[in-house]
Length: 101
Image 1 (tube, helix red, strand yellow):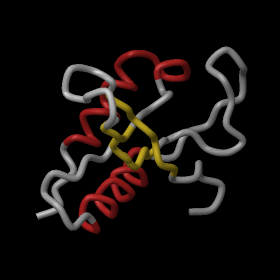
Image 2: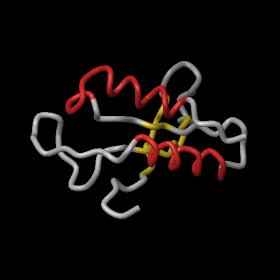
Image 3: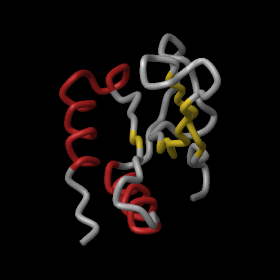
């Protein structure tokens, strides 16, 4: 995807009651972002985002490629700083509604 934010892996750890002193539970979760390169912090101007449809295709590709029904995928948006709450909510709902059946 030209000029798109790279797909990257997010690292989540659990040190709670489900992890004992010698074993740390960890999960790798692919994180799909919608901000285009160059990425900017929320307080810097000039942010640009991929279209919702483009990121829906990315979510569908990751979910379709997964080999386990328990596989988690994280899709996130920074659209709230550019388009407001409704824009960000609309994007996240669209990502959730991706049908890969």
